[in-house]
Image (cartoon, rainbow, N blue to C red; front, side, top):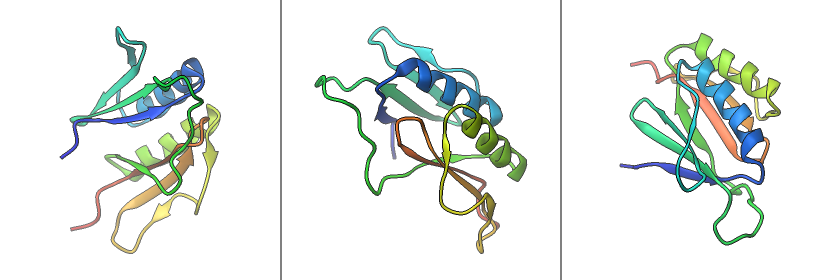
Length: 124
């Protein structure tokens, strides 16, 4: 359904540290900078792109928005959460835990305030 998700950042190097660490914790690779100055992370068939806003205004986080990233195991979710917190992310909502549907879930805000979740697929 989606080709990519694009979010804004006011500090691409800080974002690179955060997202390189969190994607590595999930088994992904580091981001790459494209010719337009955007960080691109390809993982599990999707792309997350991070850029300075093209209108020149400061980047702001979406109120009510969440970006969900699939993780293979609960251990990957925990590693993602630890890596993100170590790179300036903020733990939010509940502690990493299993949900009633069997998915294991953790939440963070990145250093720019974007809300993210890493989660396993629900139990069948």
